[in-house]
Amino acid sequence: MSAIILFTAVSLAKILLAIALMVAAVRIFVGPRAQDRIIALDTVYIIAMLLLVTFGIGSGRLIYFEAALVIGLLGFVATVALAKFLMRGEVIE
Image 1: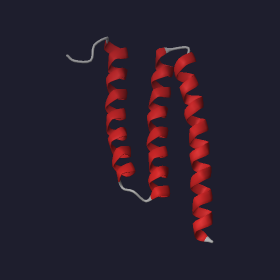
Image 2: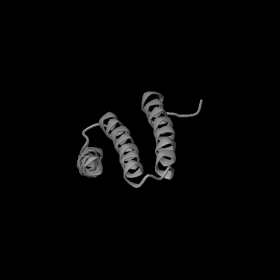
Image 3: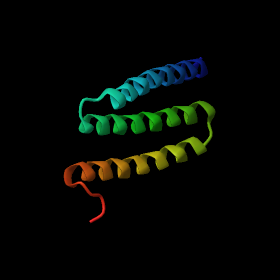
């Protein structure tokens, strides 16, 4: 019984995260300002990270969790760099 509940919950989470990923991707392309696009990009990498975690839970493989950690680190650095670029016009001082 618990395996069926786990499979159903993970499947539902994957579907809802995929829908959220599509909505955030639309915001990237039609965002009215650059700040909106950066926030949408931040949302996309967080959703991608959560999708990898749900794939890891579903399959039981550790490689998905490691990939989620890498995406989390690189996404944070990219967000900080883009925010700094919008504020000052340059990334490296």
